[in-house]
Length: 401
Ligand SMILES: Cc1cc2nc3c(=O)[nH]c(=O)nc-3n(C[C@H](O)[C@H](O)[C@H](O)COP(=O)(O)OP(=O)(O)OC[C@H]3O[C@@H](n4cnc5c(N)ncnc54)[C@H](O)[C@@H]3O)c2cc1C
Image 1 (cartoon, rainbow, N blue to C red):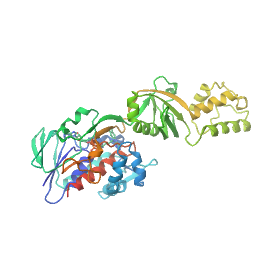
Image 2 (image 1 turned 90 degrees about the vertical axis):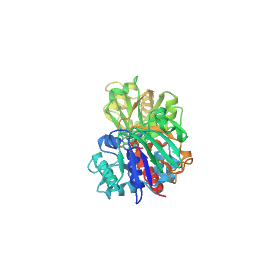
Image 3 (image 1 turned 45 degrees about the vertical axis):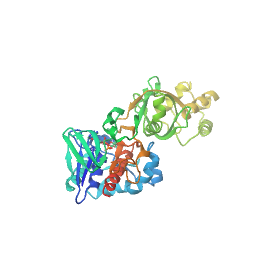
């Protein structure tokens, strides 16, 4: 039995390894001269391989596209299984405070070495610089036309990753699967006209970012950058709001609450109680609410608090302005910047045409999909690789039947 896997990335390797077995000849067809190239650069060269284990109902909420589908996939292979798989092959993983998991070596090469070694143990045939240009179905076989000639396989797993343009999926045309147009996900917001950018490098640990006029709102760390705002809360918003933001041509108003644990009234009450207790303290040099002092000074300027002004002399209007800056800081978003640490595209093979229990095509028996080629994408934090391992595992295992 010949099994072909198109794509030598995370999902392709995992699928090929789990499709191997007695009497099976498994080949990976990789278009580029390199293997696992995204794994190599991932997580700034450290590879954020998965996320801290959690209940599946919570895990799936980290996928703006694919939540329902993955509910059926993860019971068969989830974060715990990824950890066990790599650790049983000598790659110990560690958990960072925010839940991201990396190899203890802090080098993506450890992950690559484990995958290459396992592929070698399973006698997987790897064909590099062997892009697949078209796929034809003939007598229940898949005929692959590639850069290195024609190959025939009995079962085919497609793990070609995400592409920024619809045209790049043209080699799949003959399979007649619906492909959703690729759109960027995981980007940061550009705010070219905002003075906040002058505070670049500054961050808060627990803020909330909303998009005005929508219900979209995400909580987490926020980072001020040279171009605008970034950090997990912004990235989450960019992923879940990817379609909406694209339709608005990345022009929107973002509203920031700089301390997600507090509401408008709590800010107001605390400023008032502080000024009664410390009327002679200077406003600008006594930051409240764990707000970094540079940001607090910026709020004071925007609230017309004078240099050296004392808490006891704050007017009602100034207090209201301070609360507005803290709770509902308004930022004009004009454009986006790719988050280079973990760039993914939304879009790809429509999920309703693939069986989530097996990753098999609903149109063509013995055809499977795995990884980012599917219309699945996660937020930053190791969720994208987890989806690649899980779908790769399941596609490979299903092909054994
Ligand atoms: C810079 C960067 C950093 C990232 N960091 C992280 C991270 O730390 N954690 C995380 O969870 N996610 C991360 N991601 C996302 C993650 O890398 C992807 O979600 C994951 O690689 C998807 O795996 P895949 O195997 O589906 O696709 P890919 O890794 O893209 O692999 C697909 C392979 O298929 C090949 N291919 C394409 N078309 C053909 C064809 N016609 N014929 C033959 N071969 C073909 C490609 O050359 C490629 O090698 C990062 C992404 C980027 C770009």
